[in-house]
Image (cartoon, rainbow, N blue to C red; front, side, top):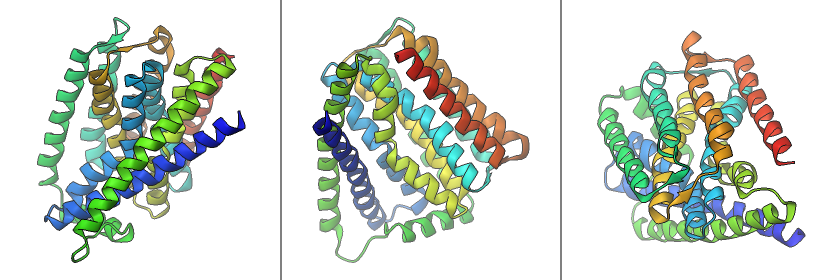
Length: 322
């Protein structure tokens, strides 16, 4: 049991640093080709922080652990908004840009609704995976087109974040950055194998379902990059980056990660997920824009409400598992 726990933490650590190195290398390469900091932040960085969920879910699906794959996505989405955004708002009230409320947040709710609509028959087929992948391609095209209309101040913020995070390219460093991307991808694959293996072991040893493990320990382990990015951005008063990271990650999770997992191998969806956990995910996704719209701010009390929602969800989940 102790050895499996060490494997789990080793896997989570490899996922965290793998995502970090992948983001760093890929961002520098993209910037060296003249791509703007804003576009890199909305695509490369957003995808990089969701890379652990991607690798873990696809690997779990290929190994026939569909419960871990779906549970990881649903659990990560709930955790991103309730725990991570809630924690960020408690650290410092988050001023919410209207574009997040009117554009990204509704897209996040629609992406969340696609899962129960496609999984009504308790199955995510390859066709369903294709639908999610096409929806993601449409979202990505929308993001890239919208980036051209952003005011200069938004680009400046992303450039500041880029400089602080060491994402600016250096002269003659493209080969080194390619190596960093390769090492990061390797860390993600190895970390995912360790994490999934240890998670399945714990589920069987404790006599609980793989879905519950995916919703809890696996979701927490794969959400470490989002937690670090959002909390750091909130501490620096960069609310739009903190919230944009969480919302973008949820859209990525719901569309391309579930889509890729279902394309890799059709997934059987647990009926209990459709009865409780997936409605909670949709509900939390809808709660965020309602909170933000009132005063265009997520204040500390609202952050505390989100945190309380996560703790109640976790308590109900563990009580049902017990």
